[in-house]
Image 1 (cartoon, helix red, strand yellow):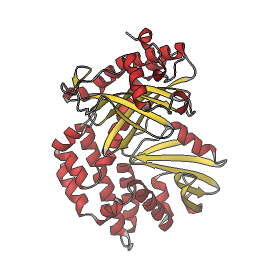
Image 2 (cartoon, helix red, strand yellow; image 1 turned 120 degrees about the vertical axis):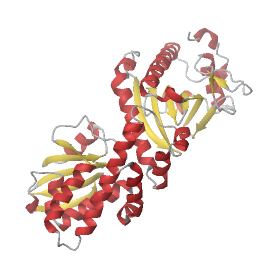
Image 3 (cartoon, helix red, strand yellow; image 1 turned 60 degrees about the vertical axis):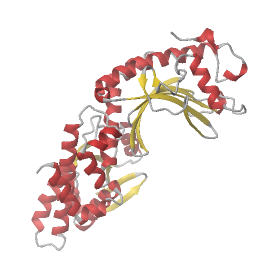
Image 4 (cartoon, rainbow, N blue to C red; image 1 turned 45 degrees about the vertical axis):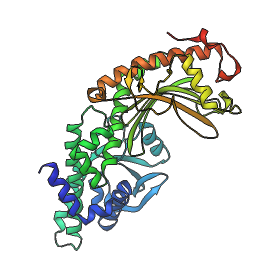
Length: 383
């Protein structure tokens, strides 16, 4: 089958239509129903489980997707169709159970940093194993329903393989999404968000492996941490790389690079303890402070240029805020090969080197967002 055939099969499937109500929870609930209906299906996830002695199956218990109690031992299934788990999260889950035996991570992408006593199973492997057991019960009244479910998850995985090959090591932006027929089809079946989230996760993982240690070594302060994360908002992928000082306090301050859709953003964020919220325009004060540092630039709207690159900014800077923080950024637009993972990583490393320099200057001078108080910022200029 080509990917158009996969789309057509999914569009005709009532099982797939139902699954769209909750893309992760649906599958977890279906697996729980399978095991409750026929305990042998537990072997799909744990080949050495004593399935005949399964006593309890919990759904969404202690934030875990599925928990199976068999012979007094605890087995945990963590389903990740829209994101990638962290090793810390999985270890935390198992540490809560004195009789933990084994964990299983499921998803479309293999999770590399699998902790001891956990294993990864792809949706395709799950489909094959379910079908093998289901074929032993062809006369069962639910045989065709279960077989259709297998078709659905195998089609989903086939689409993902096709997608991953097409967008390997490339960040997805809206302009490509509008032009690409495959992404348009994914939107038509309400599955584009899943693939875009995986794309952002993949890039965040790429940055973590390629440049995280080098960026961490640029700062020499235990209070300053490097954070690389990914997300999804306003129907677009987001990857954020930032230095954070005084994390999770009212004195938190951040500086870094954020990529959302085709926007390559230079951003800063100050929380209430490091910025005077009593002035008329605290976001403007924050912008002026980092204009002086050379992180931001004066913007001529008639030229539509930032860092000598095309931008679609309408004002001198963009901002959003709450009662506890102000976030200010400027951006230019990424195009063509600039969306390549390797090229983006190189640019991010260069810009975050400057961010580390600015962070050290701020730390040295002890200036926390008081640009409105007649501070001579010219002496703090970062070359």
